[in-house]
Length: 426
Image 1 (cartoon, one colour):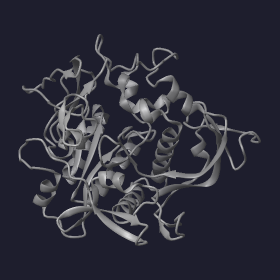
Image 2: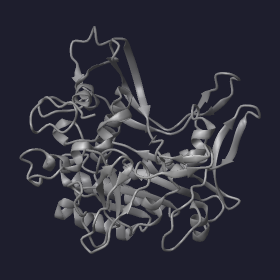
Image 3: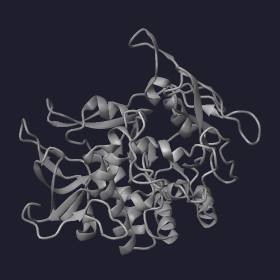
Image 4: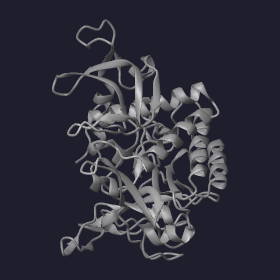
């Protein structure tokens, strides 16, 4: 179903997401008593509510377990120096002192860090989407721009809670870069948060869900993840769910074989991470901020040599940012920077110094997708999630895979030179 857009030709974000970003908030007092309110996302005319508070990273801390009264770690989170008040979609007042740090999606089976999607003039961080809008200069006449059907502007991404969290993430990044323009302070916080997530259990995260996030500590030649065992009243460890891999060069039976070939030491942090399952690098007003943000992630990647960080981006369309992307990729080989294509169904860019690019392939019949040709010849590898059937051992039949685990694939991480096409529905 098409997203409703009623605000002119330059509108990229659907009405519901824009309404979430325009919702009003107050500081320290309920919104019904406030003399001044601010929107969730900043605009050319008005700053964001997050511009009125100082946001700081707070590491995992002990919190009281509801049933037994034990002290167990809570997840890393961001804390506001003032209480933010608002009203939810049902008209019920609420207040918040902070928000979550890491994000994850059921599809990927890996932790991630998200910022708002969409053009910057609609509260997003995707400056390439500015170019996609009518009159932006990058829209090819007669072609479909991928940003028009961005997955991160639909589904659960549109929920008020996720919108709030992602806007807070972007504001925290900007404040960190203002405090330290080099990005070192930001990199230090991101590194500490990843260490906490890999080594400490998170209250409220079910064991099965945590096992599905293939990111933890290397023990007994496996990836193990921490969880709080309420029976033993202690931190326990469980094996992360292993994902079989598709044929490739080099060939691995599954993700565990892939990491065993790297020979990490016992106790090292190992796994998969997605930088931005929504949003892009353009978190600040200038390319200076974008470069510092990119350099922060490159520093993080170098701190975890056995973690694969997948970063899709469209800022390669700017020459100075393309140079910065190549520099970051050369410094951190485990930082998989994939340049994303602009137009759907057209050959994606092929850029020396970066990983294989990504594009969108068209659905030609129910459950059937075509192929995406490459500029250098051949076709891109089509992501099996949502584009093909596979046999399910659990259900004993052919199913339509909805995640990397169900599709038996980690190609986006383990085959960095492989161009990849994702299913695109008109």
